[in-house]
Image 1: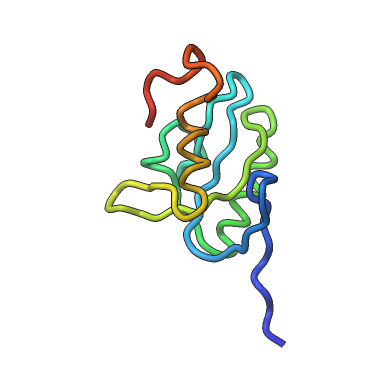
Image 2: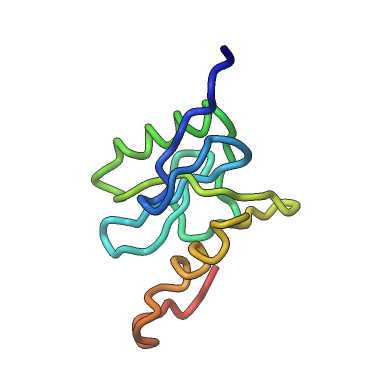
Length: 116
């Protein structure tokens, strides 16, 4: 019997399979801003340069991110595609991640002024 792909948590919203390109996202603990894991292990608020992982590498990156509880909260893997040098949300993640990166939708005073 072939091994089934590992199931991963996707922000507590749905269950997704660890297939395809993924980026690690979370919220920065100090201010709640959406951040993305970069290749050097740092967190930035722009998805454009985020590290892209697949398979076991994605799970390992997520596991490492969960250890960084003094920097980020609620890390999870999101579906992405690479568009040249840019990383963009893909599939069902597109709407959710667009809203997350823009800030709260309940009051425009709280929205981020610069959406990355």
